Length: 376
View 1: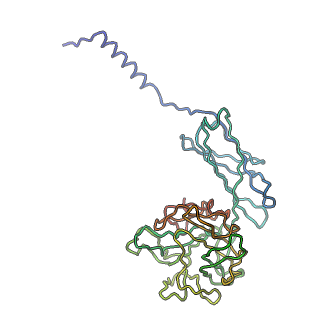
View 2: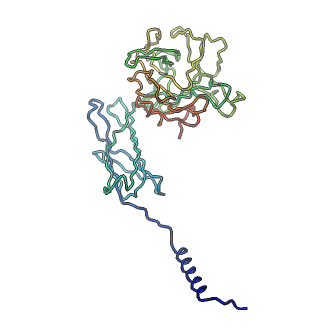
View 3: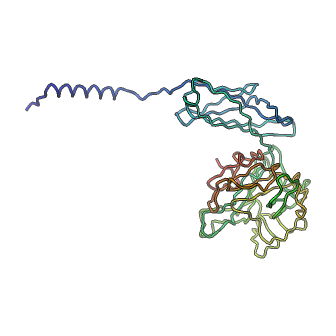
């Protein structure tokens, strides 16, 4: 039996065939909109006169976007610190730059620049070029407090004894821990020349001249409150860190039940040089405190520790409205904004050892502690 089609049905079928053919033959657009350029100049503040900026030549610069499937773009600044990226689509771009400069034979400075650019039709208007000058953040390279883990792991038993601190040697030469002191600070006047101290612990050896406890260039050093595998504590098993192989362990000689791992050397309190009445280990607040590493030239905490002896100092606070308790000369802000106790979160520098004395810039919150290595 033959099917009969009316003229209307024939016309409708023809139209559907034409439309289907069009959809099947049309390929996905491959071009992106816009044809803009990004022109940047990278400078650094003069260390002699902070009103003067100096261009950074031969600086590797990375520009990338997640808005399109475009690979990252790289370029090198010229002698005037300029670099350009051309023939780009409208998009949200990220700019990153990093290098090490040597102002003198004995000084190294790490410089980092980053910027987020929202280059849309609305933001650029009729202008097809974006131009800007970036003053790069400067970081003095040396021995730094690189990670601070104080929040404690996720738990409901109020456990925070897995606290640790990580040092990092960002210099190109060996530094020595001999005789250095590690401090928990108490509230200090913001423009004071001495630091008030809650706890003070000291590395063995002779301060400044000792050469028994080296830290090699690029080496991480883990300082544990208690150097054992905290995952052995049932309620927090799997949520915390194994510190049994820490490089150093804090130990208070007069604490009645102090844990002491015989395989890990001690940073001690009440050792004949530093002395304090506290009978507790080196523990700090889970979400707000100040700590400092000092060269050991001043270890009499009774009259305060001279700020000139400070090797590195960090203040942290979960509260963005926190009142500063560490002098601005050592840290102009604080790390850890938003971190919560018993969260398993940690605070670590954005790059190993990167330090601008502004912890709000220098540190990021990471999802889990990384003792002895850096997050990626």
